[in-house]
Image 1 (tube, one colour):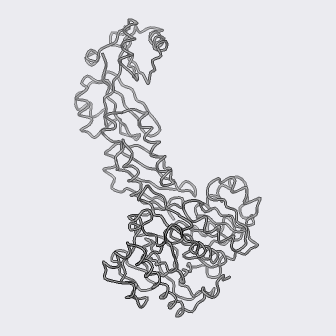
Image 2 (cartoon, chains in turn yellow, red):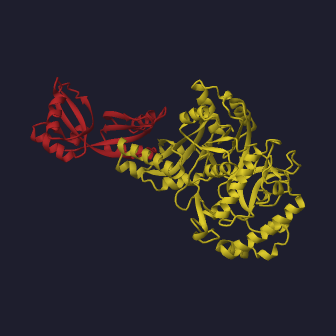
Image 3 (cartoon, chains in turn purple, orange):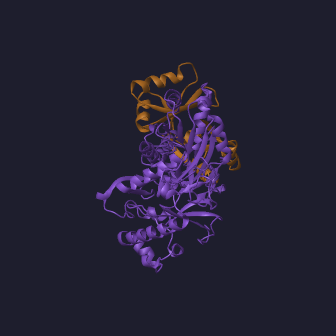
Length: 432
Length: 143
């Protein structure tokens, strides 16, 4: 099923004309309202009126996550706060998280794109949607929530966690659609089975999963565990999450990028060179309709490949392959994106430990586990070499990691030589 | 009257205690007594040695996290009720003990109990007022 027939099946020629018009508008607005873009465009000698074809896009500078953070919190907003109706942010300490905002119209756009994704999965007003995406400062849960309500389906705003309650409601309320991260879906399946619940006989028909890297093997496991169809959904917090791309039930291979709202390019992550459509590379997105927080050539860090062949569903929008790796050091842990630099920033503020650390990520069942090895500081130990003091440090690290990154690790204090010998700051043992 | 104890941070993994004792052996350091405090993730080795400063330096050079901690050594007859006589006084005077460990002197007559107090000076004052033998560090190191 297609929600917005007109735009989702727009002939490519018309789509490209629309993209160019919207790109030019976005550039004008960004250039004239956001100091950062005025400076970065001027530095490359390009002004918005120089962009007369989509090919000119490649002459514009990239925007990186670091650029967003440098403008923390509101430096990249295009409209005054009086026009902003919502603020969201990624995890991280001050200056190390991305903050993004929405006008009323941005919320409407976001809602529509979530409606498109849900309708592509066959959701109608007769469905009950069990939404186990996280609600809060991160945007994911609310995007799906709004989309579901707009369709007229019933949404259960579960958020993540409280697994026992989730399993109860999956049985009692009989939801037909499950939305969550793939690892949480598997966790629900395992926990349900261990409680003696037959997860295959629930009312669930389809699941929409995203927010972390996942493979076809994981999809098979989820489909089998719940006896459902599992679809992939894609978003980037800074741009729209979810709401950039979704799989359709008919094709079920690759996610349609909503090209009337986003321009996508594939680049070589090392050189920044634009690659031919269909080559594997880093995806770069430019927002075409966002008002409050436009992003120009935003580097996603996600490695994927565009599928240009037409899809049997009839949508004309290009598809992207599932993302299986990244070209930066971003880690997705329990659906939350973090960077090693954020861990370092937290440790810097804690007296008694050095900033040498090692983050070890693994899985216990379907869920991610995090162990953080931290070196005890020499001066601190010399002055306060007691069990109590060291345990207080351990607690502080767990608390700060939970407060700032929403990820409480198991902390292990280690002797200094240990980490000096180990070069890798991050060991990810998970198999996606 | 205080005694200096060396505290060494030990990672909870095979070989870390052996490494510490090897450094002590290679530097000809004699351990008078010791104890280990352990948690799930780490341990702290507490040592009374014949040469505090040397021990501190050689362990540091070997890469250990080391600290000097002030403790109090009290000598009591090695017989039933020996420790209790001290605890009675500490309890009455409201002195909190963080941890303690003990050993028996070579002569076999007396036991020496090593106490860690929040306020060692005050504890020493009270113990001496109650006629307990507080062993000075210098004497203990040379036992």
